[in-house]
Length: 319
Length: 293
Image 1 (cartoon, rainbow over the protein chains, first blue to last red):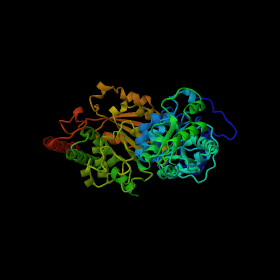
Image 2 (tube, one colour):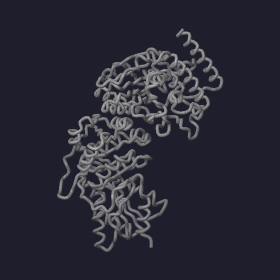
Image 3 (cartoon, chains in turn cyan, red):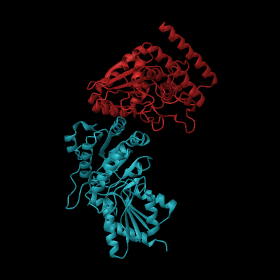
Image 4 (cartoon, each protein chain N blue to C red):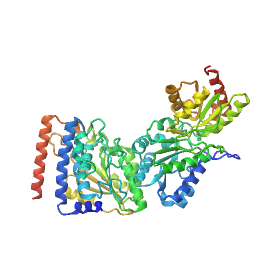
């Protein structure tokens, strides 16, 4: 596994918020258990294990079994948080997620750790940039992509209380705490900055970059709306249609391939309800080795890259 | 509590007669379902029926009117395609009306080709793709191991299903954690969809494989109720080996032209075959009564 990401003042690893919140939930509710695939360390659940040793089920390196065991624990009345590297959890165990969790409506919380290109140097085997496309098609599975530590904690709490099968995509790339304007609610998008010229709809680690892109654009006289689409399923279609209606041009930004993820979800809604010029910013297929930041820059997943995408789509705006 | 009443009924004198009567009914009724629907998996239904009848009418504690009761014994149908056996067991046990069996495979029926827990009471987890039921059953057993609530988990697997790698991930963990509340029954009919298991990807030495994964293994005749009861009825013991019951069965049991025939893995009898099957099942039912006498 790769070394810890570079830390900087004011930047946080969302896994810490995840582990802290899960430990607090477990202290309140004896039904909360953690299921891991030899991933106590990478999920930062060492303290959880020390405090609740009987409530960590380590299945070893066996992701299919990990997800099914989670479904069985839910049948037995537990609220299992199944935590593993997002790349293995979602790809290796996709049929288990489909059948045992989503189709069976099992009260399992799947936590994809170190998602996106966090494991940049380890290569495409360890990148998890197809997971949103796979999982958001599974009816009944809630898919949440938190943007910062606060939203990660809120998502974990909301998932524990929801009774629904849920996937939470947790990043280890350093992100700042954002200034949120509304309480977190599953299925509701949040407008972090209003504007009427172009909408940037972002999720996860791209939200703070989208806010910086809006700063760049504002200096040029372009007012961008920044929408934090932290739930991909169920999707806040009204927020998407409103952004397209009010702005007439849409950019989406995600740490994911450009097919089937957030951009795909937004495009589906707009194609049917409000055709609008769009740019989908993300990765184009398997990525080479390199640091996460280098991969993000290369794909235009930076403030400057998103600002450029906004200018391009504005040039195609009708009227 | 009703569950305890059911337990007494299951334990009382005449237990074997009751299981036999239910199994005979299940065989006839599941064949009728398949005949009327024009499709199904009769071979595996008939190999598994005696196992399910023993569990539901001789071993398990449950209250069909409270299918989500936390302390119920669980049964997981890992070989999810054998819904003829499962649905007749669940209907016979009272989880839904027997009359509903006539809707099998019809549009919008609750009786899917593979079981669905979200709308059919008594189904613990959705199965269908092979290799899912045992891992889920292991999770249920771990929950009991944490809580010590005393319920037991039974799971029926196909033998061909044991070619799925996920089964051995689960078997390994169950052995490691000493899930003494878990019993896996292998429907060892020696046939998979297309051919004999041993000609496809051999399972033997099967008992040794389970033992090597930390399980206690019992090998029985899967159509003998005395042996089935002895192998299946044990308390949920903490921290002892999980038990694997290799139930040697006959695919298509009770119907001569289906006996040990891979070709009857799926399909449905025509009218003449159906009449012959019912006549032959009546024959084994009478023979069963004579055996007892």
